[in-house]
Amino acid sequence: MPTDRPAAAAHTAATHGLPAGGEWLLVDGAGGYGCGCVDGLQRRRYHGLWIVRRAGGARRYLAVAALDERIVHGPEVAHLLHAHWRNEPRPTPSSAAATFARWPLPTWTFRVGGAWLERTVALRPGGAEGGPALLVRYRNCSARALRL
Image 1: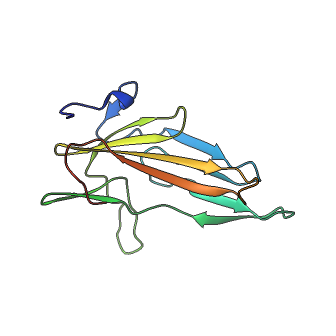
Image 2 (image 1 turned 90 degrees about the horizontal axis):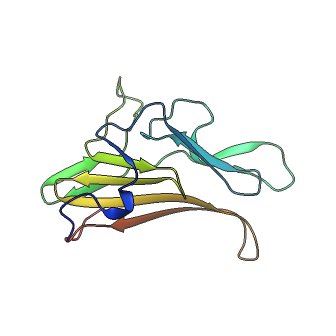
């Protein structure tokens, strides 16, 4: 079982605090998009996991701003990305070591103690199955079960 960084993330640049200037972008094919900073802290007004556009309309609406994700690994509880709460003067930094890859989809690989978790974000275009959708996929790369 993995004791080192998973092979799928080997081509990424490893940093404990992900680069503040790095950004990612996805489109859903219906005028909507998802974009943000690699470290999860929204620095621009138009950042969000999914911004949607209604069919026939020009306005876009923030459907999913962000996710408050945490890994529970034994006694450890780790925030995966930055979180900024209204009552807090500063954003809470991630307590997990992380790497990021833009291609083929924005993918973060988080390490907490001996646990590894991979998160991929995608936007499904509308089609025969229905309208566009936000897809967030988690993959446990550890030997033990994790609680998300």
